[in-house]
Image (tube, rainbow, N blue to C red; front, side, top):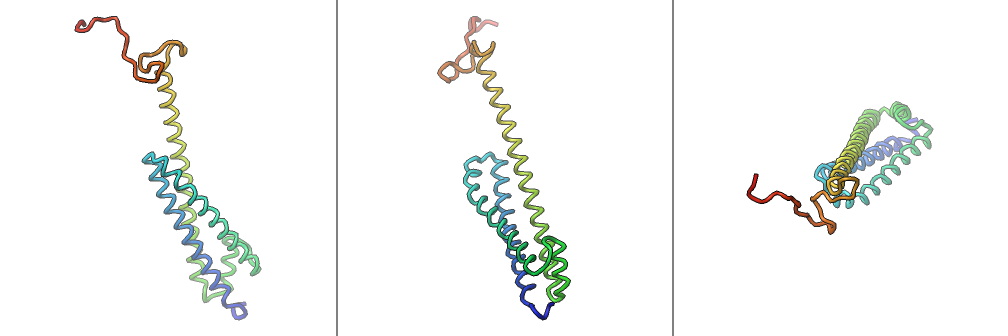
Length: 169
């Protein structure tokens, strides 16, 4: 099989390498996203979303291309198909398997970072909600009918209304 179509194994290795570089760029973007989450930079997170969406679309296209290439050559998709293809092309076998393993490792890293970032976002959201509840509770006591003395009706800080004379204990 190798003599008939020697370029397909090389082309497939090149496609795997290109996919790896796209995943690596996505990992870098996820690392930037993680720092923005940790630093509470909401504006930066919003600015990253368009690029993140473009990268996800690109990664999906790479994965589809890889699967299509394997199927068109008569192999299964995924690791089994790549192993079979590599076995049929000994000259490219080591490079192909090494590139595939490196790609799989980088994909795992991207998935891990994505899950971690989602967890960090959820944690920040829960903390924000808890602080918001504490503030609204402090702003209104007795079922919301009486001011707590923290904020006035206009939203400005209200001074406490005490009956104790100043300079008395």
